[in-house]
Image (cartoon, rainbow, N blue to C red; front, side, top):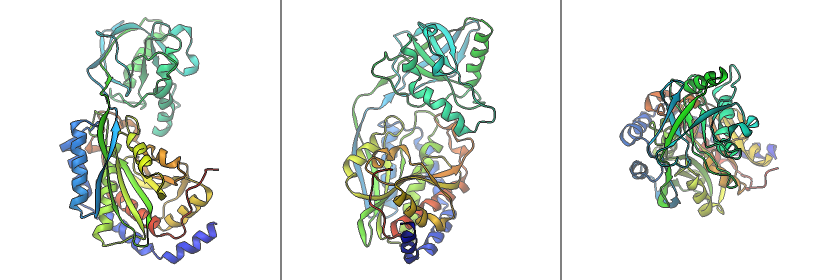
Length: 441
């Protein structure tokens, strides 16, 4: 199968065009200007908020300004989560306002807040009767020298499941140490997932410096008491939209190569790395193809998804509307701004072999396992999914924080990623004999 794909790929003769697109991306002065507008003029854009709706109109206007032949808004119904007023304060043994952020999807505290002693837990396995009536502080042990991704891999499961696991033993709230080694007093937010079989308790993160301070006090036998107050709630069902644009294919217009990113962000920072960079790279990749007068054999479709952060509603709505169409590949940009280092893909052996041959002229290795969260529903339909892996060592130090701002973005890396996405889309849209969506083995 791989040999057949290699022969088919050789017949497409698209290498010069792919290299020209990468060069055009490196010279793209407009990419950073557009990202600057999204970050500085629109700012944080929680799904269905007024800034998000402004971002939808902005993205739609960009595609139209670029002369794209198909531009449309596709309706999505979502239930955004609203943070409301929140605070956490250590009352004893030292009065101190704790830097904190409620976790997305958390319930509120009782009116006026709650106060309870804190109990330190390093892992879910340590939970037991000792947490009843207390605020659980998860402060996992982080191996020395762990990378940002490795630290996030330890932190994320506690963020998702820690509150319900603690509630099962009678805890009244959860606090979670944020992911970086040194967060400079900047906590991270993110979604949690409640177990419907357990009570829902308020959940928040605290900056690692203050979490470790409380951990040291508890290790010394000191009682630590915390007051937690959160007004978190759901805003109910709201109608919004994915932004979609495409260049129709010349020979196989019903076969689709999707490139996507999520337009929403958290309600803090500017959503620069997560995922303003991806949004601009997708918009600009399509613009570069249009500007050079290129007509791919397959349709290249750009999708800016709504509500990746709070529930993946945009990805699910897209799959519900388009899942029966023939997507030969779907690639998401949602890894921050760094130099492209690899493509990560998930699919059948036939699909990944085809992708490997198509992507070969771009000079980046292909790794198995990947695909952005917005593509989960398409992956369930058997579509090959993937993402661009980039070198951003500090990504997990800033994403989902007040520090996710434009100044963290390297314009050179932004341009490099834009060119890589445009070139990959072109290669996939022109490589012959794409395997049908199939069942993963």
